[in-house]
Amino acid sequence: MSDKHLSSQFDAELNSISSNVLEMGGLVESQLHQAVYALVHMSLETAGQVIETENRINQMELHIDHEIISTIGRRQPTARDLRFLMAISRTTQNLERAGDEVARIARMVKSIIESGTPRNLPISELRMAADLAAALLRKTLDAFARLDTVSALSIIKGDDEIDAEYDGFLRKLITYMMEDPRTISPSLDLLFLAKSIERVGDHAKNIAEQIIFIVKGEDVRHASVDKVASVIG
Image 1 (cartoon, rainbow, N blue to C red):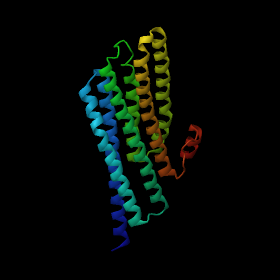
Image 2: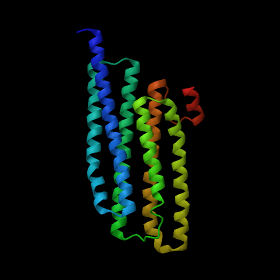
Image 3: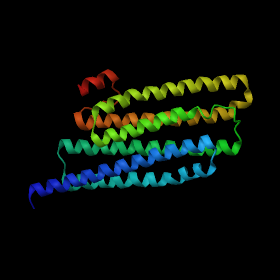
Image 4: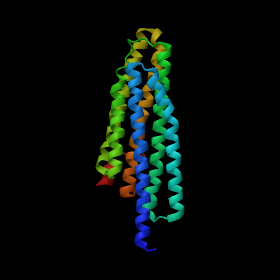
């Protein structure tokens, strides 16, 4: 069998793994939209559907990991291809953890509905932060598909916007709790929910860092935005 044919097979395997990652990411994004819908519309049914899908996301992570390990064992990839597979593994870990946060949101929504949280709490305001997180995740998946480092940098910067939304929401909840102690318990539920949304944004940022690792070969985790920008050049 020719080296060219072997190379073509390897490229096909890498493309298949990438497609599976994008499918997994799309499912996480869809579930986040569903969880937010459940919150805004107080839908127990929708929240339940999100929770039921958590296992599917977990199984997709296991499948992709198996494919990565199998490919490494068969192909013994060179440095660049091995870096790509390492980054894929880290990406699926972040997607699975984002999926965990989405399932946590759905469980919290279910708890909020069943406990009869007062409607005067700023539940609808969480939608803005969640929409930002979903948009950031979508942008990350698009950047991953194109290995676009410029978009990856803008995603890393965009995570700050979600953090700012979280901080503003936290201040508003504190005001509600101070004005009416009866809102303390449900406000804490909303606070944990908002934190999960913020963490989805963190995972999108982490994936963007892996895009840069694939293309530039430099690990920019924990690096400043200025440092990341200098790596991209």
